[in-house]
Length: 330
Image 1 (cartoon, rainbow, N blue to C red):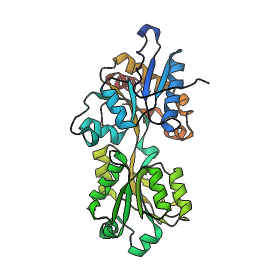
Image 2: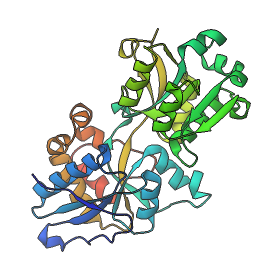
Image 3: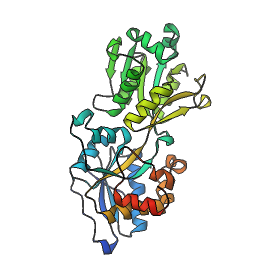
Image 4: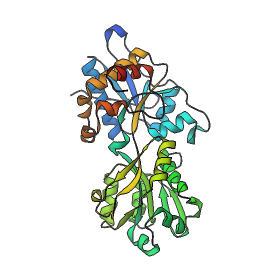
């Protein structure tokens, strides 16, 4: 089995080999080691090694999609993984980019689509608190804001921004909460289980272990709020996701289907990447998508040639667009 190389932030990437050699040694900026993104890097490594023998993808650990977008924009790495919301912030100069639009980012291909539900917004309420204050809808959340202790993700994290955007779409002023906590998902989970917060709003995979842990800690006494068709569509459009559904049967505590917002992730490159390189990499992913899917069980059903070609908020690199067009995928 090929061994995925792990680098560190700031490592210099190795330039692509001469075109005639059909060999690529490239760095992919990701996040922490051991997670889904590192396995995506391993899957890409297998694909390119098969398509172009001798090729290697070096997975560079780092701070996630926002940092990756900046690294690619500045030409410090050739490729990076980023979530749609993070890419949206980058190209629009929003959030931590503070008005500085990252104009040179281009999409090579999608590694998972919003419909895969690897990242969807959960607004979960302690069932006892929901019953005490009569909270069953986002409108109820707005009315009872001053009675609620709420947690969203850390400042500068687009997951937290998405949660606040959903609330704002329903007229919920976060300043009216009894307490608003900015915390990472692990800390948020601990606060919820210790009954130190009443509501946790986070973008995380359907039935992620975090959600299962909270379900167990509350004996399924939870409420998942429906975001509604208008707000889910608006937030999805502005932040690059898609409205999606959690069906009643999918969580034991649901009383009906719940509408929310889902986001996917893409591989981005700088527009200066050679068209041939972008074309070769994308063509390899299309041809050997079954090899890529072996990297993680969650990718098996969700990944197809069609899903690789799904657009995001930034345009495809011309080389990638050519590969998709030749394959009849755009």
